[in-house]
Length: 343
Image (tube, rainbow, N blue to C red):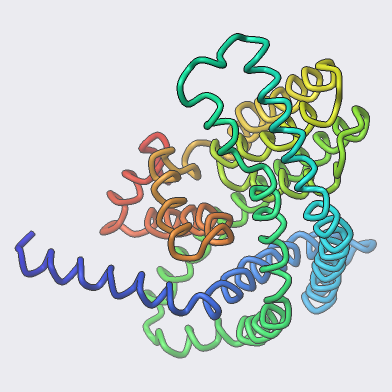
């Protein structure tokens, strides 16, 4: 690669990231809408397989059922957020105080009081700020609700005409057939990823919720929502998802027994679903390299904040699926994959 070409690529990347940064208020709701739109399309395909006697559901009815289901889910999700976010922010300072007392108590018990930096380290950990930041993610997304709905409507309208436009644009039958073949493979892989990842995240969240409710950890619904969302981020998300409810169980109770129960069961749930069941059904070809995940989280987090970190991994997986389907970009997909295996 020549110096001029490398410089051009570097300038182009800088320009793209700058546009993404300044266009945050447009791109974030659009990407969220794009994800929801694709979930609606995937759900429509699932509903079309339902049979009423000898007949399958029509495309129109399946689409209406899919949109209704998604709207009900979003409404329920937003309702749960509204019921919990305010309460979490309200009690955050009291948890910070309890954490400081617990930290100083552990330091005295272990005799680390004379070690330089230990006390300062405990004091620097701001539980209140972390809880408020997590709660702020939901309020940020909620603020985009109107724009997200508008984008979804336009995407659904465009979806009906998109196939016809492509057929008219690609007049050569062979070119059109090749295009349809590639798009079908991409569509299948994306649907597989979204379906399995959503089921895995939902199962993890439900089981974790049951554990937290049985033990009596505060805001079990809120932590279940966090676990559901963060499990879309492999490895890193799974660790962060259970860190806060585990820490809360340590702060909330005067006994260590609830802490050990929550820690053991949440780790077991994550390990079984994330490391055994999910790879078995999804395979390694749809997973990203851990290094790519870390770099993606850093880059997108710096551009779009915490919401960008939520979106970056699913987006990167979809990009990698697309790259894998074209010969010229397949080598890049191999480098981004977990095991160097792409289909």
